[in-house]
Length: 190
Image 1 (cartoon, helix red, strand yellow):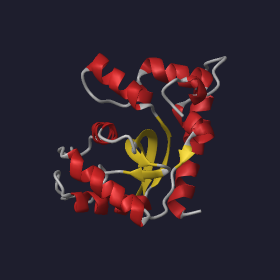
Image 2 (cartoon, one colour):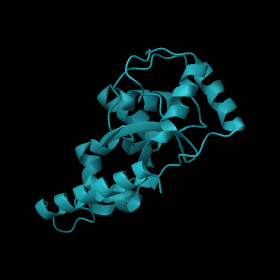
Image 3 (tube, one colour):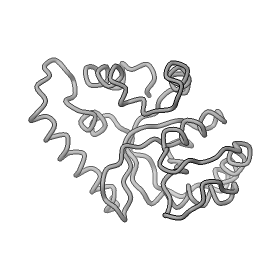
């Protein structure tokens, strides 16, 4: 296990344990989102993209033609995943090796591999060529990601309801459903 993955697991467990001590909700399956992600979250792959995956991503990035907003992971990931059926949308936590802190995060995914165009070195441009976006996504494979897929139809419904992109799992109604029953009963996750 990579050091960043082990640190993510350690922090999720520490926060899950801390929240369990202070959360008095009875009858809930989970005491916190940390607990739910620790138990049910997918550990996304850090393996390099294959040549075919690289070609698919270049095709997607070439057709997306959108501004990538700094520090707007939910917008970037939801918008990118909506542009192509080959991408999924995931939410959970990310952690970079250089700053080992849990970050509530959203990213697109190609199978079990994260396609993260938001996390970047400081000073990187907002608009990028498809090749630069691929480089950014490949560089982000060094990060750790744990989360769940959220159905893109649920994301679209949320956009229509709220008028903007946001963290689906932090919506109070969705969060309560997940904490009560786990991800399996939330219709938008898999």
